[in-house]
Length: 96
Image 1 (cartoon, rainbow, N blue to C red):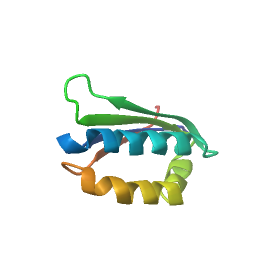
Image 2 (cartoon, one colour; image 1 turned 90 degrees about the vertical axis):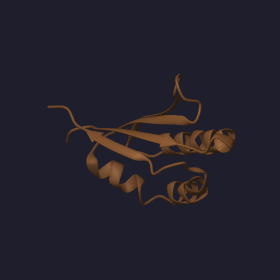
Image 3 (tube, rainbow, N blue to C red; image 1 turned 135 degrees about the vertical axis):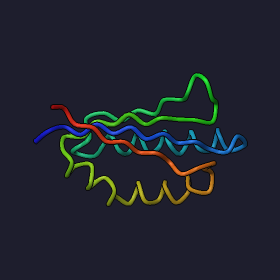
């Protein structure tokens, strides 16, 4: 099985940066505990204080799909959604 790389760009409302970063950090910590997660980091943009990118590495496409079914992801996304300035952009990659 090929590893799956995921990048998600999250743009939050300016006045919600601190709250959103706390939620994203919690998401990263909990996601790293999942058996199929090899790497999960939250990176703040150096150019825009309200933009964050998640860098994720999963053992497989299936492992990443199971991630979407976890309670912690569903709960954090429910809290994060009202803080967003726009819909998150998610891109997925594999090695050739």
